[in-house]
Image (cartoon, rainbow, N blue to C red; front, side):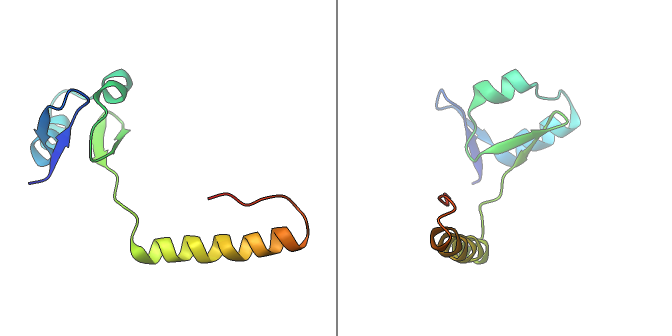
Length: 83
């Protein structure tokens, strides 16, 4: 079951929470920040949207790009590259 867990350890069913949020009261920024929900969610126009985990392909692209950029920056003594 996909669930949300707040900072008190209370569990919320993700589908139910999202459906309720979308159909009735909207979340405020303060409520969203205090809830510390897992999985992480973003707040968009008062609606909670779960943040998808990056795919393996995405991670490989990030790593390859960072490695190439790091080699270029080091060779030119231009600074540092952080991920």
